[in-house]
Image 1 (tube, rainbow, N blue to C red):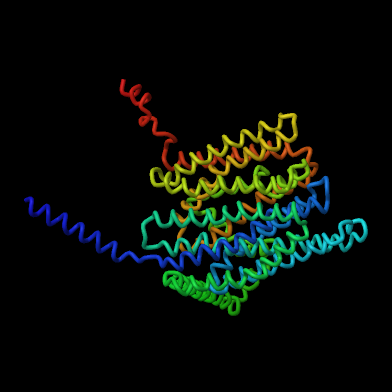
Image 2 (cartoon, rainbow, N blue to C red; image 1 turned 60 degrees about the vertical axis):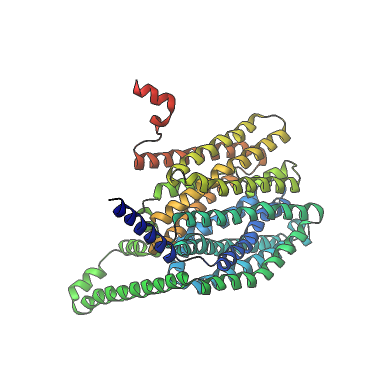
Amino acid sequence: MEEETETRVFLSNEQHQEEEEEEPSLPRSMVISLYLGYFLARWGARTWEFSVALYMIYLWPNSLFLTAMYGVVESGSATLFGPIVGQMIDGMSYVKVLRLWLVTQNLSFIVAGGAVVALLVVPDLKSQNFPVFATLVVLTNLSGAIGVLSTLAGTVLIERDWVVVMSEGHSPAVLTRMNSVIRGIDLSSKLLSPVITGLIISFVSLRASAITFAAWATITVWIEYWLFISVYNGVPAIVQSDERRSLRSSQSQAEETDSASSFYVPLLHEEESYRNTQSRSRILRILERISESSFVSAWRNYLNQEIVLPGVSLALLFFTVLSFGTLMTATLEWKGIPTYIIGIGRGISAGVGLAATVLYPLMQSRVSPLRTGVWSFWSQWTCLLVCVGSIWVEKEKIASYMLMAGVAASRLGLWMFDLAVIQQMQDLVPESDRCVVGGVQNSLQSALDLMANLLGIIVSNPKDFWMLTLISFATVSLAGILYTIHLYRIRKHLFHLEKIPLLNNFFAS
């Protein structure tokens, strides 16, 4: 009996060793290339995100109008075209997506940086030649919006697709670790780029920061493309995934051709069917075309996913001014907070977010991503109470620093919640729907960001920023309620009360 048990244990260990040997290893050089390329891309995007608010408040002092208008254009374009971008990515080869993403993003940022330099050359251009001023502002807005759309394509490709493909065949901890590193790279860019940009603006000039930004986009586009192409060629799993995408695309095209032929043959041979079709109202035909459009089909796909409530909860967090975004940055600048202090505050905020990328894998290994999400969300909500409290502080500087501190502290819970929702999407969304769902998710987030910027246009006086703070806090609270409902619907309870010692003794008695 003992010999049989020892044999069974030996075979089990041997089988486990064979499984470990069969598990493919991730090429370290390819992983480093992926991370480095992503860092270069995110650095440019985060630099522009921080700088554009300062450019706009400088061009139109004492008003958030230009800052909010830029946000409307940027968010509106991502809202309208986000689902379409997701479907475009799904129907294109990886190499084409890389070219479209990197060339379009960096070229757009170069044009936007050049337009800003032209605006800053003549400080009072608005009063001297308003048509030229308006043209350059529009060019800046459109170029920035196109750059953000192309950035969306890269975000979906890397975060929602390549990371998942590269981690396939490995333990779930590999995907968790890669997600944390990717988010850490993004937050590192968010930490360092505002500090460096703030120092350039404070101790050199706004114009120097715009020139530096345009030069960065010009140089890095080639390095980024080389790094990502190296990853594509060096990881067989990505090539195989690309082949599966091409196969799905060709099959769907064949099915569309078959359905089209089966639909049009009766029209050619059956006059009665033809007359019925012609007699349909124009409104009905328009509705049919809309329902069959890629935009609507992408949203239909998203709404049928299991993760729709977590996705909506995450998107609601974008309907806020309680972040170091354009509106809050412009308001702090208006209140007299030095630019480099704002940059340092934004850097500290990102540093707190970096801590989330370290803490998340530890917490997720003990509880599920679902529960990690609920705990991290309500910790974020608690920190934002400091921002709400700053409204009633009379001293302007103290209120501003309270606002910055509350936002910075809340980033720990925010980014852990973000990672928890993303991992749930990666686990539950089928491979064929990843890019589409990712595009819609980013579109929904942009739609809520658009609404926040529209509020910034309506409430454009920085003195009334407290109104935007209260509305933002209410929206964040709604997001937490929706996610908690999702948790309860899945788990049928919120807390393990029996695991609390005092309550356990109470129930036992």
